[in-house]
Amino acid sequence: MRWWDIEPVVALEREVFPEDAWSEGMFWSELAYARGAHATRRYLVAVAPDGTLAGYGGLVAVDGTGDVQTLGVLPAYRGTGLGARLLDALLSAATADFGCHEVLLEVRVDNHPARRLYERFGFVPIGVRRGYYQPGNVDALVMRNGRPAEPRHGPRAGTGPHAATGPDNVAPGAVTNAPPGDERKP
Image (cartoon, rainbow, N blue to C red; front, side):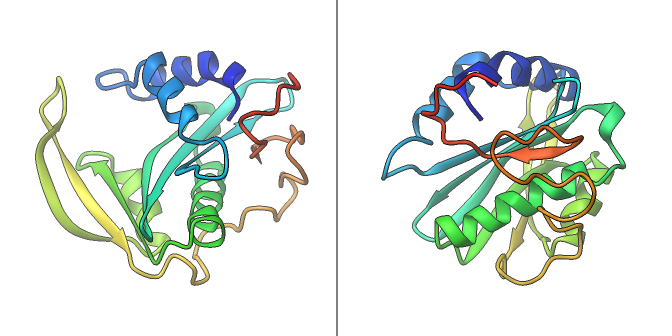
């Protein structure tokens, strides 16, 4: 994710998570921690051929533990494998770039499609955070993947007809991962 992705990511965030969307300031803060040699964050975007930002995902990694902070896909792109490609890319970054031996996440207890996706990727429930999502007071299911480097059961990032071949690829559902400091606007 780059700075110019923040506005469309916030719009997508508001559409996908209307009750508990992150603010623009939160994304700016996250990108600040995704830069440089001591980066602890990785944020990815998926761009459709028409330039629409179709999905995004973010990860924080500290002391060998990763945490999927957010993952969102526009409704028109759900069921295409885009969420799986984003999650796969985040897990790959967690292990290859940050050396994580486990990855955690929280998901709304009522978000059954996301829960199924996470289970396909080896996440198992380990707890509940009561009233975590506000203002709706919805519980979060805490999930853990203790083997994030193992082969996953979803589509592999970088494979298939709509795979990213580089940071500027804009194939349908391409996951882009350009350095946050890269000032070349797409």
